[in-house]
Amino acid sequence: MAGGKLSARQKMINLMYLVFIAMMAMNMSKEVLSAFGLMEAKFADSNELTGERNEALLADLEKKSTEKPEEFMVPAAKAKQVSLASAKFYNYIETLKADLLREGKYSIDPETGKLPFEAMDKTDILDEAWFTGDRLTKKGEEVMSKIEGYKTEIRDILGKDVKAQKVLANFEKTFSTEKVENKDGKKIDWLDYHFQGFPAIASYTKLTAFQNDVEVTEANIINYYLGNVLTDAVSLDKYKAIILADKSAFFAGEKFQGKVVIGKYAKVPPTGLSIGGQSIDLNEAIDSTGAARLDFNVGGVGEHEIDGTFTFMEDGKPLEIPIKGNYVVVPRPNSATISADKMNVVYRGVVNPMTISFAGVPDNKVSASGAGLKRASGMGKYNMVPTSGREVTINVTATLDDGSKVSDKAVFRIKDIPKPTGKIVGQSDGKLPRNNVEIGKVSAELEDFDFDLPLTVTSFKFKVPGQPSVTCSGNRLSGAAKAALRKAKRGATVQIFDIKSRSNGPAIKPATPAVIELAN
Image (cartoon, rainbow, N blue to C red; front, side, top):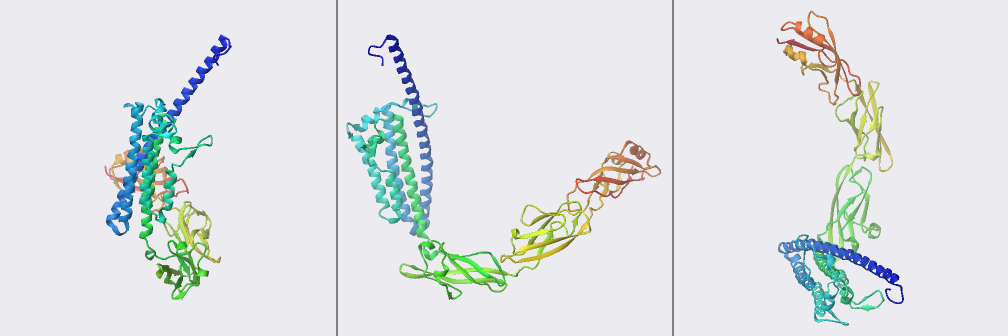
């Protein structure tokens, strides 16, 4: 761009373009290198966590091998072999990473604890160490030999057990070293494809990712041995047949409906089924899920047992598994259960919480109605707010499983809020010092009332013997009332009456008077 017969000005412009493009390439390169560094750090953290989990899994398997050696000793020994082989190969990869850092003269920054990602752009470190022309160096051959050696060790440990074939297939796929097709459609050697011509940080990250493959492989195989043991330890003769009734209780005259299931039923079809000594036709009993459905008339009211056998073939011999279960038959309901949560009556003007249900019938199939009755949140919960009249009737209807309906009703008395008790300084009678009466607070309280209904005194009258009554606003003595109090003799009885109050709901009757003897 800067040569030829171009003018000096054009040559300068072209040179500036080259410098600009080079600067962009350098910036992009730094971003890519940093991205590889961040990825390497993620893999390193993952390797540490996976390694800790693998140690815990192996320790658990080894513990089980001492508790139940007949079931866990062989799997634990194989898992230990996998762990040793993986650790050896993992550590070898670590030496490759150390060689790369040493040859590139890279080191971890003591302040940040990180490698100099953006400076790790050399591509010739592994190129010179592992490749020579179209062939591998002795070091490159060693790398491939170590990979193949690790694969051989894992294959030998897993053996030819058909149950391990899926795990082995995943392992072979993860550590495949077959030739890889590049972007030009040409197949090249695995090591060449993954490591030749890459910046140092990219190769370092790939090696860490390769270590991650080792850790994950170890975890998969140990988990396989744990799962395999559980499959073998729970032999078919240790299974229990389980009865799953469509509902927990049945009405007299209904048919029992439910299922009998056995673990791994779909893979071990039964050869026979009997309930109560009667043989069941498997062609009709076995449904699409592999469960055996039961369908018979239930007995009378009370608890009943289900007794039978499931027959399977194991090792060429019939194996009978006993069926044990029970169910309860309850009478068909003809009355509802209706109860007020706090009393046997309902009070006018307040929210009365109630629970309404029908024995043996789910809440979503029960409906209740009555003047002032509304459904609340919760199973069978309602609120009753009566307004007029002396009684209220609650009607309840339930829909049974067969579609029929049953009804019931209950009558509740409606009572007014009781008259509150008038008090001063918390007392309705007795002796009090004159000063306590003068500064005391008058209150109206609903004693022995089951609802939390706060009352606020709005006015009252105050009477001293020999003096006219004084009307006070609020809940304390007015100035006129205090003046009358000062004229009262020692031992005189003062009255606080016509105590009016209000609530946040219904109207409240005047409270009973408070009668206090002056102690001084």
